[in-house]
Length: 256
Ligand code: ADP
Image (cartoon, rainbow, N blue to C red; front, side, top):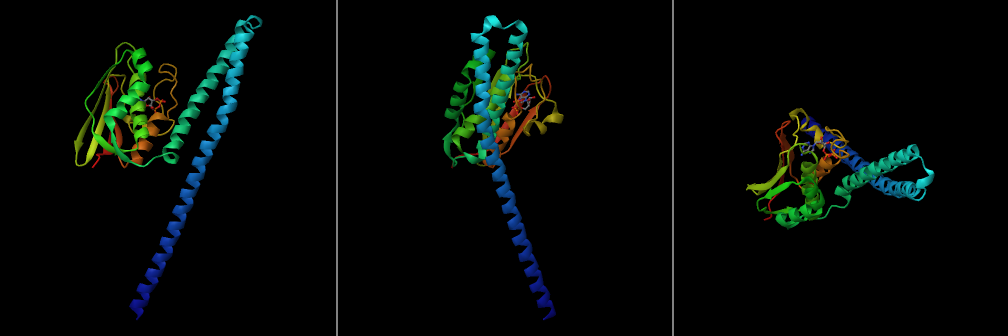
């Protein structure tokens, strides 16, 4: 009887602990959702007044050109650039918060067609960089299509951005298949990344290379990729060394 009494107490204690844990998890999830919603609304509401500031500055520059001296024009230029940078940051923050809130169901998608769409969106930048792009045919996977386009776009976009200044960049996109899993790779011949930073760059706001030299990034792109790949139950990583180019890889479930 004593032993059985002990067992009953253990079960009661365990149940209490489980209830407590479930409640705490729920609270954490709720505050996470609140935070996400806050980030989303704040970003939206910040954008309108910011665009107003930028467009009135540009109007001032255009319509009052004769009455402005060089210094005034320079100051207006700083203000417009600042507003543009903030606008880019807001766009990235919105895409970060949208990964969860606007995520669609996973369906069987043709990743080849989605890559083509990503490359079309990047066409002006590909031309500007005079980049060579190669890709093998890619498999059908179980994914949220628009989010997969975004992953391709961010990775190829970075390969275009972090290219060596004195060499044309070649970007190769491919995939291998095994055990119901597709492993995609985006390989570039750019400046490369020191191995000590390979984990860090997937965290939000982490940047290694100079903003000015490489065209004003915000440090959100790879964090968005990681969030998307995590949402699909996949993994994302990089293999790279300075001066050796980079290979970004991620996994997704193959379509059944
Ligand atoms: P952003 O490009 O806006 O700075 P990302 O999150 O896309 O932000 O990338 C984080 C950092 O990782 C970049 O600032 C850059 O230093 C490094 N990085 C990303 N992709 C590459 C690449 N293909 N080659 C070299 N460095 C890269």
